[in-house]
Length: 187
Image 1 (cartoon, rainbow, N blue to C red):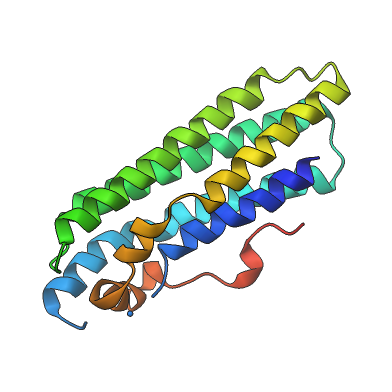
Image 2 (cartoon, helix red, strand yellow; image 1 turned 90 degrees about the horizontal axis):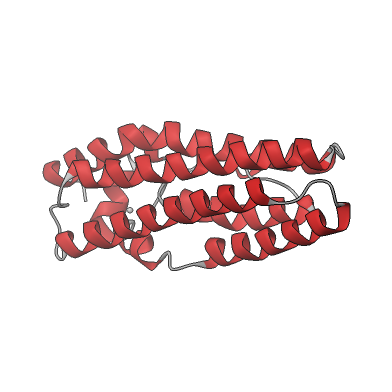
């Protein structure tokens, strides 16, 4: 059942990677992108490591208690990383492009929402009954469905943030270059 969690996390990782790539060489835009991208890579790495730990726990057939502990820690890490990504975009200020304020607000709101959602998943997994294998598996199934929803959730703001001149400027920054495809959990 934890494999479904890992599969669902792949969708969430795709959302994070939306932040890490895309297409102006304007100095203001590049300066804004640098402010954001300097803070992105450590957070993306944190999310990928959390995804990896969930994937490993599912493949190693760990006990429900071990899976619960691993998933709880991973959800906490992912929640913190999304919060830090929201702070990075917020701290960079309004991007110097048309509708920049709206782009910034939407991206920050979405990232904060994801942070809150993963904090909620942590709470949910912490409350699962590990003493009853079938109940625990059913709880993980519910978590996998929620993860799938999060992975598919409105990433339109981030895609807009990553489009046009902002996207180009961000793609030129070391911290916003896309990670290799092998870095997301496998199913």
